[in-house]
Length: 595
Image 1 (cartoon, helix red, strand yellow):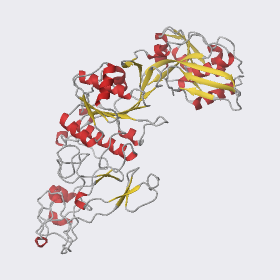
Image 2 (image 1 turned 120 degrees about the horizontal axis):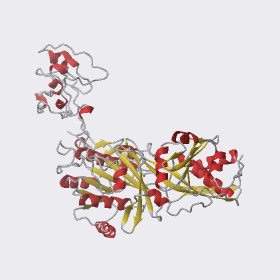
Image 3 (image 1 turned 45 degrees about the vertical axis):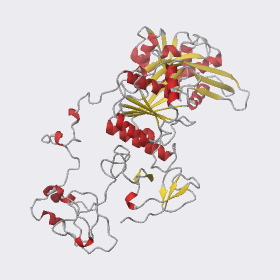
Image 4 (image 1 turned 180 degrees about the horizontal axis):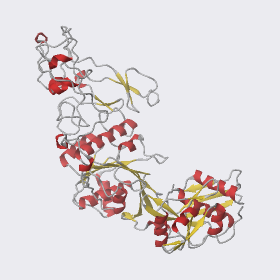
């Protein structure tokens, strides 16, 4: 006998539901977004997923699969889980020598040790109620009758152990430890760390060396990778190339797209001159249909382009909303973990550059990769900001050509390909990106301002960090930059956040302000402090090796690093500077006005 359905009100923006109507949603604070929603009867009540969202379970049988209804174990619902049952509380006691159990009370240790199945014993209902006796081990509670039930006395906890007297076990240890006598094979979820083989997690190489290096050596089965970037930057092109090369290596892959048709994908593949014969394409946004296709095909790699277009029919929210993105991502993560499928998700970004949707989306996935660069430039930067199976802050460089993205084997040489040695306002600096040392060109332009407030503009470099360096120059030297416009650019479309580039930016600004060219064969690296001191940097050996490989013969370093490395290393003369004034005198050909 099902209960009467009650009216709920669901927010069309965030997906949360409430018992009464509000003019303004208490969760997302949006006005007039609550819509009336009358759920079905108790037997068809939708399963709750997440915080307030509704994963509606459709009535009637569905084929077995990941996204079947929650009618049984074979139809476990979207996340493959049966809703948690709540055992019936019997107000009375035991009948026919059986003991009633409740989830609100845990049996003592002696009862569990004496009879582990005691807590699973079914409740025998009074025959007068015309109810079927549940078999032992049944977890579905009987329906509560509408007529009052005769009172039944609850059995004491000692009643279950009346047939066998078992002493109570000692209290559990606060930090459980597996003793040597326990065989981990008896517990499938328990394993000693030293027994885990090193090759337990094989990786799938995509065939794109830069992408594999950023991911830590390739795709891990069961891992979910999120790739974000500006529109038109090349995310779909990169994933189509990776999927095609995986199929060419004998790895089954499924490309799911909700933004393009199959014909548009074929046109892009023709333009890339890579049309793999075994790549499967599925134009679908309903994740239930996608999961059924995965169940039939069983691919090893799944590409979803994009997560903002995917949706779950049971979630009362529009595709791309916060609730829909979160629930869809959770469903795909659960699918990847249970089936061992590597999932690649495409995520849109906002105008601030962050991935659209909840920030928790980046916390849920295993790896987050951003593609950077200007749409109208040739080079694309692939940067890893999170990776559970490898290092972070790794960087890969690609060149966008007529045949798609092409890997750049020597990024330093590419970024310096148009550098003019000895040009005023142009200095070569080094930056550490993950495990790679890069040489880059810092350009600066200082002109007299035509406005009351001088401009400070930077491209590829933090503007607040630039203002800090200008304040140091104004305070520690005789350079007057208060009434001048300063423009700084990192050539090649690269964005740097490492403080080791500070000295290169400072030299470039001072060179443009004084018209003093820097040394032609000099590379500057160092962090600048507020006191005008040049501070120690990390990985100086790796930077010097990259400097020597590209043929430069001088390196301007912090004095502490030069003292550790010596006066010469790998054929490079090391010049140490302790202050900004000393760095300007060593780095520029002409004498700048110093304090």
